[in-house]
Image 1 (cartoon, rainbow, N blue to C red):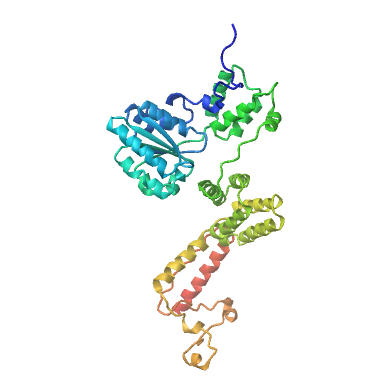
Image 2 (cartoon, rainbow, N blue to C red):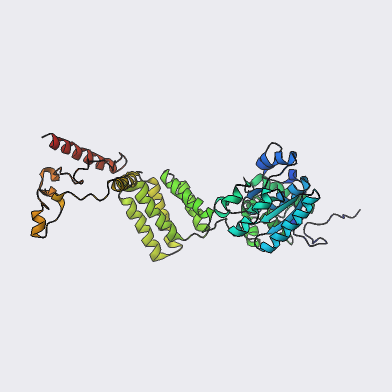
Length: 433
């Protein structure tokens, strides 16, 4: 009996992409999002109660946002109205709102799905408010960007944000199994290449299925090298002006602060592979050297500045090695935020005390009048004092001495701490005498 099942690698009557042909037909078939869709999960409970609230689905590309929205409409008997914020404007929204109002009059609800909702400007986002507020529409917005930054507060207050996860290896493997079941034959890949295919998808189910379609003309079995020649790895998710940018620099910063050179190198590599400007990284590690290491290792800032200078001279990729060297140095250096905290304490003290004059004894007196006013009178030249320390008071007259710099016992700062303690002892002895 001839096999009448359509082949995965032959165009069907509509020429639909594989990702569309394998789009789940039920919420139970959606992979990787059980934390939201399971019967006891937030969206799962809403579906069971046949009651949806407006929501924002926030997650990376290819994790199922559009599919989930469509299936939610089906399961709750709502009319599914899809829009893309990239191609739609106020006129399109007005038509949808008017149609939704007419449906509501006859007892029919509307689920308005807006893909890339973050691309609507503030005024366009505001246009949703009355219709979400009175229940004319259930809004389901999809976004790859952090809603806290991209959506206005009024809209966010009327929607619940659900975070979708990138698809993990088991979820992507399930998609491969479904694709091969439709094809009726295994992928033309050896086991190692199959794992490489999953890695190339980088958590994006749609991209994975598109990669599988590229294998349609392959005869024989490909190894990893053969697969790499045939298909291209998905570009890393990284937007230099959006949240991913700040997430990764935060991860690099905290890994160095946590004295983990391995993790720090990993996040550095992630940023470089994502196309980050190495000079931005160089500037940030200079700041880190001052803020998180300071006097615990005075050479740290020199290492960071040297890396910056080397990169400016050599460029990529050679100069990136200097940045990596600095990252390792900073990650393994002793840490102290005493300078950072000391400056903060000094600024608070300065704001509190206003415009107090320096004490007269440390003011220069270039004119006779200034000498008559006591400028410079009684000044003690510390290099000539015993031990190079006079113990004079350099705070404004009438301002009690306050300690703003509190050195730690970490690294070289332990030596500094011992000096500061000795000078304080000498000051106290001088005050008693």
